[in-house]
Amino acid sequence: QAASQGIVEVNSVAGPSSQKAYLQPGQAYVMQLTVPAYEKNVKLRFAGQEVLLQLDGNTNLTYSFQ
Image (cartoon, rainbow, N blue to C red; front, side, top):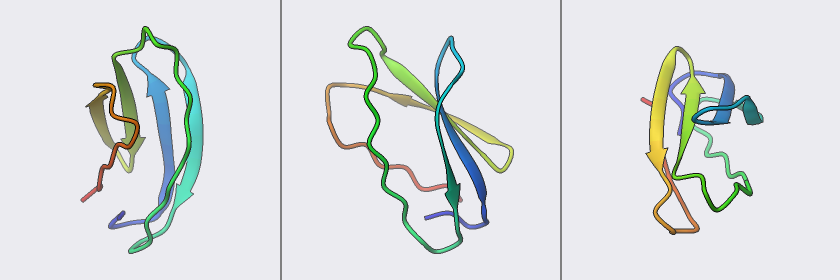
């Protein structure tokens, strides 16, 4: 759950934005995203934060911005 509101971007490590969504404080957001099999990581950007999430074959990833 986000501590503030704003746009979150999900990006491939080497490429442009794959998906964007508007987050609101205290409200979980679920997105479905299909990435190529060769992608091993995705970047999340939100409110000045950038996080690298590893894609390890798990189909459900969770992250909470603080």
